[in-house]
Length: 421
Ligand SMILES: Cc1cc2nc3c(=O)[nH]c(=O)nc-3n(C[C@H](O)[C@H](O)[C@H](O)COP(=O)(O)OP(=O)(O)OC[C@H]3O[C@@H](n4cnc5c(N)ncnc54)[C@H](O)[C@@H]3O)c2cc1C
Image: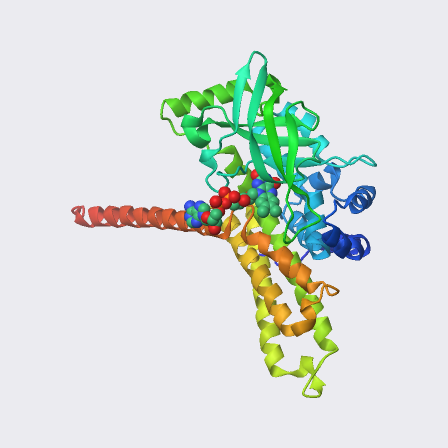
């Protein structure tokens, strides 16, 4: 088992960190206050080959699965809102990759990422006013009319909503079948009947645009159904016959991205932690340096331990995912759950340590405190992560119990058999 970063991973980490220092930190508070889309940083990232398709393919190629989570942590250390504005497209790409054919991937994934000077963004639209965690209750419908699909419904809280070139929309083809009656569709930006609704005025990650997305008799060509007609018909046929079919598209996509989301939360926690230690280095308690105070040491110890523990869960889940090891114990969800909780707890703790000054909007702490909370809510709430982990753990326990019982029965049977003379 190797826990250290390789020299290449370290070099990559330093490259992303440098970008965050030079291009993200200087404008983070401005975009947060204005709630503006950070086109300036997106352009700078594209110019440096960060967040482009080539870049994303390269980081996905790392046999240890660590580049993507290093990228997430460093970018979110820079600014979570700006980082999400750039990385949010990855969700659309993951949606296309998990449901689409090779041909569809080649056509649509490049349109989710910057290419040289040209900026492209993707969005992934699942959540609706009454369906997010409860994904089986989606009300957006897709009906085949000749050689076109007609989409109707509305989506809420969509990252890059209204500004994405490509939106992957999850809709119900047969609502009676729940998730098994759902499919994903490509909807390009200027499709008639497709529009941006209300832009959310958010607590945190304010540089990332979040909007409603509305589909009113929105027509897309039949071939924009991800995976194609034959695959969908087979899936529907199996579902109607009561046969077990693969998991829902949306859930599969979210599962692929959980360690990345966990690493993003850790970026915020680490930013707050580092800032706080540097701040305390300048402070005195009872006339003595704050960093020599044993009470402060206790709290720094807790912060460092929690942040490291959370990151280790991310590194393990990302390594397992990259190496095709099934996350049977809920390791992906564990990483997201722990990192979200640590980010919220650590940013609050850092606010306490810095004291009243942390409340001042001239310091970045209050922004990190606001940014952290979303990691307990989106991409599956903390309650949903616990539910997934709990079910998988109980399933694993039952499998082990059955295996132990079978081994015991075999041994008992063997012991009861007469020993040959
Ligand atoms: C800033 C932001 C960006 C987002 N970006 C996107 C995006 O790009 N694409 C997209 O599709 N969605 C996006 N979302 C939506 C987000 O993923 C969902 O809001 C989130 O997963 C919660 O789902 P929900 O809205 O259905 O809430 P609900 O599930 O209704 O949550 C309400 C409460 O009920 C709890 N709850 C629900 N079910 C259970 C259960 N079975 N057991 C225990 N507790 C339960 C939840 O944990 C929560 O506490 C975004 C949301 C935000 C705020």
